[in-house]
Amino acid sequence: MHYFDYILEHYTWAGVALLVLLIAMFVVQLVYYIFTYRRIVKYRISKRKKRLTSAPPISVVIPLLSDDYEFLGSRLPRILTQKYEAEYEVVVVFMGDNGDFYEELESMRLAYPTLRVTKLQYNPLLRITPKQVLNLGIKSALHEHIIITTTTAAPASESWLSMMGKGFMRGEIVAGYTAIEQTSGVVNSLIRMSRMQTSIYHLSGAVKGETYNVSRSNFGMTKSIYFAANGFSHHNMNIGENDLFIQKIATRKNLCVVLTPKATVVEHQWGGLGWWLSQLKYFGSAYDQYPLNARNRIEWDLRSQTLFFMLALTAIVVMPLEIKLLAVVLLLIRLGVVLSVVRSIAQRLNERKITMCYILFDALNPLMMLLLRIKFLRKDHSAWK
Image 1 (tube, one colour):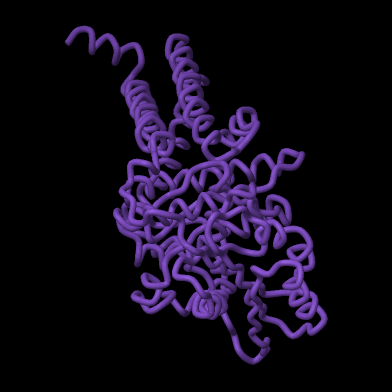
Image 2 (cartoon, helix red, strand yellow; image 1 turned 90 degrees about the vertical axis):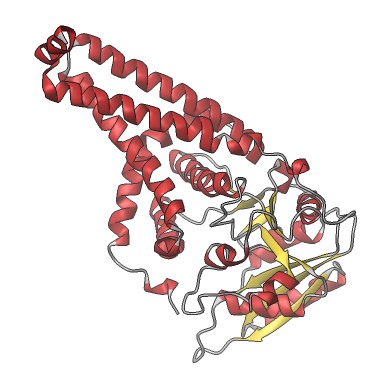
């Protein structure tokens, strides 16, 4: 009792409260990285029971919503030249009225027999969502097993389809990782690390069997599951096929996460930090409809990180020397644990040279999320039909 009185006299009630909260937030952060996020490192697809004895025929469905010559020239050929042990086709659903572009797309079938093209005539009077375009592609696909990707991404290797096919051997729904292409500059580093962090959130849930989101450029399902659910849900939104619909159909037993560098697809970076925050805002328009436990898990990580940083900075500024040193030690321990876990995850996801990038991102992420929250104050009407 006298010792406690001495502590109160030396540090005051405010100082003791600060110290207790600092240690509590430190523990919360360690729990997130050592137990929750480290699941991704420990996850093994081989532990899942096989449902098929061999890789199945696959239809890759890609909605093409504009005249994208870069997609035709660079990304589409990388999908058409996959080394896959079973039969596969690539179904491109083109929505547009550019006859010259459509003819060029059709002409690629001469060089790539696996390509099939379906056209949806563009009508400015009708508001057609990407989900409706995907629905047409899935209906016209020849095979039971469907992989969905986008025109903005390309496989990281020739074995991408083979790895996703192995996922179908163990699940009726498959999910892979989508990286942002690596270029020079601080902004690219922040965007790459932000993509990895948001993926860590939903992948750590998926490997536990609590799936609420998958990458929209790298996931698939069987046609049976798709049609049993009456197709995509939330028809009043232009988004939701990779999260709100997946929440409807995914279970602990039917979804298989494919975590290997060969199963990664790489997405093109179209702009700077403003573009990236707009992307997060657009696709985050469905966030309020996520399960409460998924939202709480994300929110508590961000809140505990922000509060831990603020408390540590306050302790370093106003507290006695021994508490200053303790705050610095806790900051360094957390940083070491975070980098260790994130580096292991990055190896599984084929993210390279992340150490310095992630230190910068880790320091700036609370500020980026604050900017995103401010952007959320205005509804993104483009996400709604």
